[in-house]
Image 1: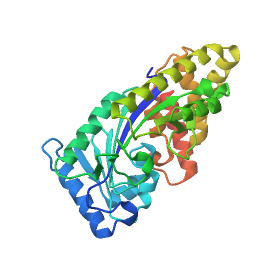
Image 2 (image 1 turned 30 degrees about the horizontal axis):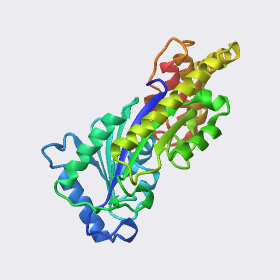
Image 3 (image 1 turned 90 degrees about the horizontal axis):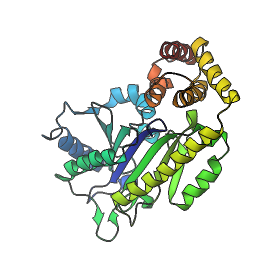
Amino acid sequence: MSNIVISSRIRLARNFKDYNFIYKLDEKDALKITEAVKNTVLTSSDASPSYFREITGEELKKEGGKLIEEHLISPDFMNLAIPCAVIIDNSREISIMVNEEDHLRIQVIKPGFNLKEALKIANACDDLIEEKNEYAFSEKYGYLTTCPTNVGTGLRASVMLHLPAITMCGRLEALKNNLNRLGITIRGCYGEGSKAYGNLYQISNQVTLGLSEEEITERLTGVVEKIITDEENLRESIKSDALTDKILRAEGILKSCYLLSFKEFTDLWSYVYLGMDMGIIDKKEDFYKLIASLAPNSLMEENPEARDRKRAQLIKEVI
């Protein structure tokens, strides 16, 4: 399933007791929250500074775009007006955003279909912070959050899927409608309001109240397994000389192009990756890491044309 499931993500929203939520939080209290999280995470015996590190002001300005492309921070995080912080681990799978929409956003991303492992790590980080800090919690409602849709477990579980066959066959709108009825949403690869570059989609839960963490992840797992089956069946149904031609033409363009925009790259790479999965192209490359490494900010080129030229050069080396 890992060929279709690119990655799994768990995100926990938490707020500290006795502090206003973000939209009424003053600078003094925002700084207190930031220092409390840093003092807990960066000095804990379970999470030494060599494991976690804070990305500070200048570094954040320089690397912010890249962190967004790696899904380690949200686009909104770069525009926060109050004291904030982002702490990541050395593997770049764990990120802790402080004072984004909630006081805490704990996020874990694992490659492949790995929700259980991601949840286990996120809960360990959550427990670590809660050892020295008290959360805003209601016996009736659960964890209290800025947005009412996160009240309860505060858990958002999501899975990134590569769905070229469902997209090509025009089944995406029907899939969206079916998922909405189940309390599941589908978004582009960079979350709410984003485009689905390279036929990549995030499938995530909408309901957090009245369900346990295990129930949320199990329900999402069942839905994703059904989507995978549908995608696999449709791939069989669209096998043809015409599809093989499109896949090999996409590979040919990537082998020979001189300039390559990010959109064109993701569109072509989706075909090539599909060809790898279907045995038409005899290669195996990491879809997710390659897209992140060739995204605009990751190329570290200010001039758009220089970025497109560098992207073309790098993809030719891979192909």
